[in-house]
Image 1 (tube, rainbow, N blue to C red):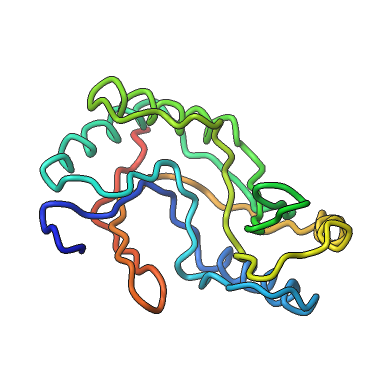
Image 2 (tube, rainbow, N blue to C red):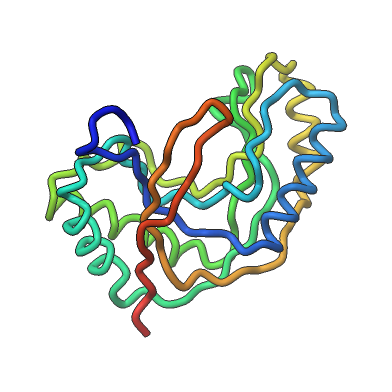
Length: 194
């Protein structure tokens, strides 16, 4: 927690199964061999973020829980897989290398949208300006990469494809920043109602 004990840094996300984290670690190892200078998020900390709050008042957590429950109503268990790599913000100025998700992404997008709408309508939490792009951060680039090299890497890993995994719940996480990186703790989970 930060100095002000009435707030926590928090986000809503989907956890990944161990096997998927293992596959992402393998992807990181292959990318490392290309010699790019980057920091590598620990696969055990990887998750699919649906909504990042930044600091949120502890008194609002129950209201967030209600919004999350509302957002998952009628959402079915769906399957996704991790696929390929891309960069933010652009190939010319790559800062982050990510892997995307494929599969039943229409259900995932519906869920993310419902979450945005519910949090805004019920709590006044501002909607994102950008459209939802489900991704997993695999590297944070420290030294700029030539665009040609980056394009080559994207091509090289375009066939990266994890096993399928099922999404059956969303989780509210607390994120604590430490000198060795962020530590994420699950506060509660909201399973999909069948």
